[in-house]
Image 1 (cartoon, rainbow, N blue to C red):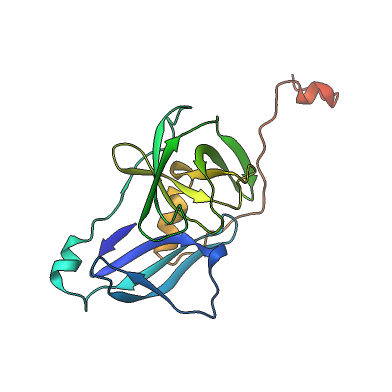
Image 2: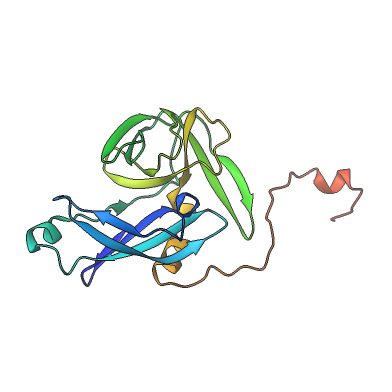
Length: 196
């Protein structure tokens, strides 16, 4: 997600974590750096962790590239996408495929998310980021909202950008408990409600 003041911020799946365990980030030279949980969003199952890299070699620290965040607002069926992280069940793996459906809207407490399916095969406990062909993160792999268990599904990044900023700052994502829903123009007619 971000690197500042010798700290890395890492987006991960909270649903895959156990707070009784300790976690670390594995760097390019296989150095393990302890990671600390900073923020959790229980609605999406996403979390942000931080790792202090001040003790690693300057060469390795300077070589860490921060992922560029793109937009998921203009994703179309047939767009080529790349999965990085742990999409095939092993570290540092890469998969690729195409977006194979229009986004499915998931209505959640105080927000809604666009969830896309890809033609890539889903792997249990596999997680990571979905990138466009320009190397920008446009989505986060999800198992929580994937209805087609054999396909790799992802949450569009544009829907969670504001939430990620809050998690990185250790700020709780407050809400008032409303679940939004799109309704058609004939909704009021069916309820015999005059909206004129």
